[in-house]
Image 1 (cartoon, one colour):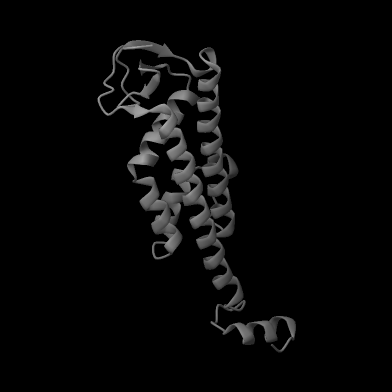
Image 2 (cartoon, helix red, strand yellow):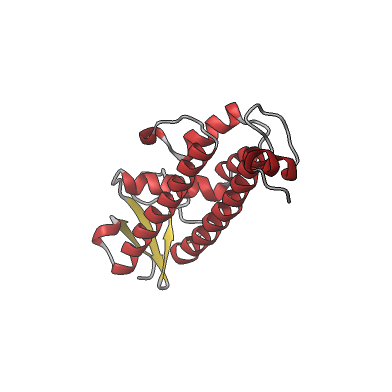
Length: 182
């Protein structure tokens, strides 16, 4: 494979590249599912077919500007890792071919996933295998941290505010709501 250029449609090339295709779709689905969880948890009111990672992020910035989850969503959506991943997922989703470069038994993504040139730049040497492992690690780590933040913020909202919005300490809330003294 030394110094060869390949125009690639993941579903038609090496079996290992099909796994890259699957990984990109699955990680994208994880982010979509997380977006649905945030939409429901914070009652954002985005219709199911319109829920996406970016739509939830925009709605949170508008309606929940001071919540930590909003800052987590915003920071992740602005990261180079997410932008590159999103662009690669969009290319695959819309079945737009792109060029991978193979060198010394390694395969590299193009420097710019939106580059439609027959010989796009691969100067950054974005290795397919290590990039996929990085996406897996970083996206799952983000969803784990952000899910925990959703849980913390929703529990605070649900457990420490009564139906009138009055702040209560935890013991008073449980006593009023359930008649239980802690």
